[in-house]
Length: 487
Image 1: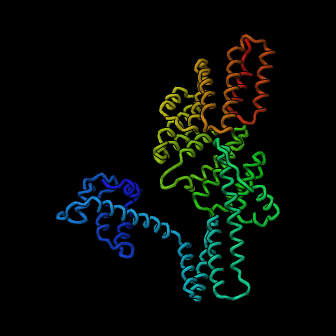
Image 2 (image 1 turned 30 degrees about the vertical axis):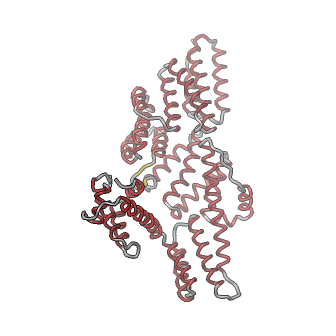
Image 3 (image 1 turned 120 degrees about the horizontal axis):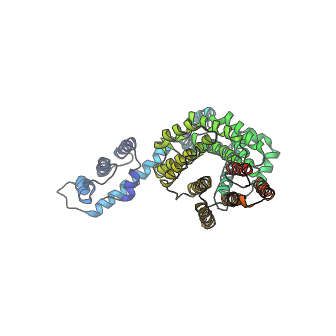
């Protein structure tokens, strides 16, 4: 069989890609070796598995040279190598073909090199008009403007004239904006990963960037800068809800200026903020995040090439069930199951069905669904163990509950991918569940005064704990203890 490197690349091809690749190889501008055309067409016939006998080295050689020519293995290897280079050139060409601005920029460079003044000016006007009509105003937009202005300045410098040239202004202004957007963008990403995963990131110069923006507020009039600035401040000052409110307002107003992938990521920051607020007991964010999710589903912003992210799938189910939207949730779980990435499809479906059953107090059905879910992923593991903890508590399976608490503690301590935040929130949950269960077990042996005092102390400590998951459920269990009889 042929090189796995070659076939691995070709396995990613659609039928349209293959058709264009054959045209590419057939073009004498890119290739003048007819045997490479034969090899490319042979590979197309063997797609998508590339396991056909026609791809055995002897068969490939015969197809390229004819059966009368003695077999030469090295010639096969050489042609595979030549075709691999063509394939890489083709992939690069596909990207170039999609980069309209990049094409115009290279044209401007060529016109400058050839000293074609009139052609340059005419093309430059077209490029400026094209950029002015672009709806997407992300970091790449300003970087493109910077490179275009840079080429215009190179053209002007070749004219050997002294005087005012606004291309220099364009270079500096667009470079500044590109830097600010990119700096904020990736600093937000670093902060977010630092909060979720147990990894060390440090973004240099951010205090200076913050101060600069505060002293030069005109930059915050640029949506892409202000959006990421609000996200950064929201991550740094999570207790200040103004940053979140500003972010949502900006996204509502300027979402059309964002690419689909980036828009979803920015909404994701807002949704993560809502989730954290909900976990800390601020339940008024439930209806808001549910509305955001329904809007995103309606706008089809959550689907990419037919694939639905399993983490978003889980988050939507969690929020909908907290609002008792059972019928809607069941329809959603079933409707989007087939769109989940195959790697997580069964785990995501079974875990969310377990959640669906649990919220309706169908604990046996929930346990059955959990047993079908693979829990290799750290976040599914944490969520599943937390649900199992609550099920054992609800079913009063005391021995199973104690055993689970001990094993859960060990998992939290030993797993290096559990972030500090998740470690603390789950350790606190385990601590309070154990104390609540102990009170439930021993309340009949306690005086009414001591029992009431113990519940009050437990409740006070829960209220004082900022990093705590499943806080609403825990508070509900404490209220049940308060209502229970001492004797």
